[in-house]
Image 1 (tube, rainbow, N blue to C red):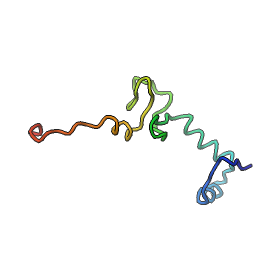
Image 2: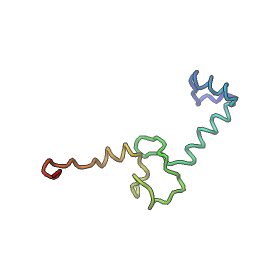
Image 3: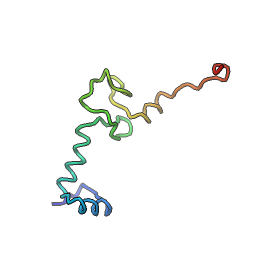
Image 4: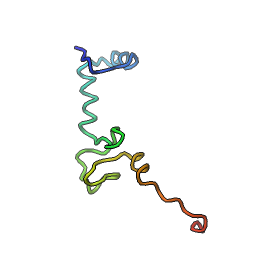
Length: 88
């Protein structure tokens, strides 16, 4: 059964065939990643931070807003550049 809202490229279709995956198995595997890991609230990419990890132990987490990926965190909170005299 092919779901109309799922787009799979020809390469992915070929790889699925090699590994013997059905449409349902492929969709389940993709959904499974989103179930385990947080999604960046800015760019919507999977962050690699487990949803079960306590927020006190997370990197790139904004309380009241949610989880960010490293790239979005660094875009929002850039590190200050050191002045030449501070380098020694």
